[in-house]
Image 1: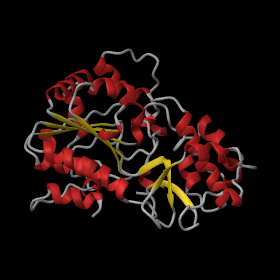
Image 2: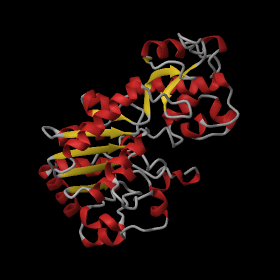
Image 3: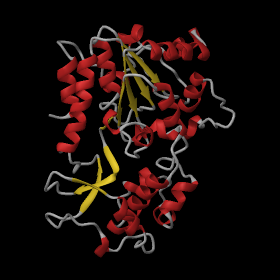
Image 4: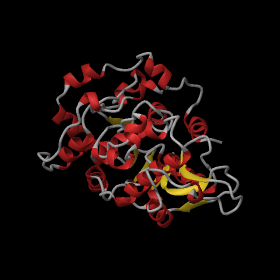
Length: 337
């Protein structure tokens, strides 16, 4: 049974699901009106109180969490992206790594070069401030983290047994054909293979092979071949157990940087659990998609702000060194969702 089906079984008792389809029909509270009612400082004071009062906190972290820390190569034409793309940027005309991964004309070797350089960066980049600030905010709390991020930033600052990865992790390989139930930590292989890239392409002979069937390996990230094996199921069950153990307690669902590309993993389940559970409260922090459905407007608080600024202001830290992302440059997945 998939993640979304298991969540539905947990929280829906003869009710209509809050879904992205309904959200696209604008059946949600007027976030502009709610923003005008109370200023930002008051919003963050309420959020701080909700964190302090909560018996349990579920953090849902997505790409906006990393983007707020400056990791934007995935959807922006920044210096990190240009270094990883090399000559492929001009050869094919893509201007961010997301488009590079899904470009239909790159060769298999070029595609592997893009992936290997991305994974190498995941291992070597600094830890984002949004993650260290969140860790400080949650210190001493009963919390659990569910994420669609594949960059392993949460693992830099939080214990592994408090995290569930719903879309995999760049640091692992799997058999592309899912011939066996195993994923492989890939750091040594990734570093070695990066040195073998020639003219922005990995030679065919160096493409990683499955130790069981001899077929190609692939990165353990969500795709048509994504392995939802025992490793994945163990993490998923840990998350389910936390939810079930705390469903009747004062639970805060803190959503950080979740957009509308894959709302079925974090956004929709959070909304539905808040709708069903009597003491649950929902707070999305997002400059674009802090959406509150009308059904849970009385149990929610939308914070339409940059996550980096919001977390530091809650902690009373200076923000003068931060730079807000321009609205026009924020990733908008509407072209593919």
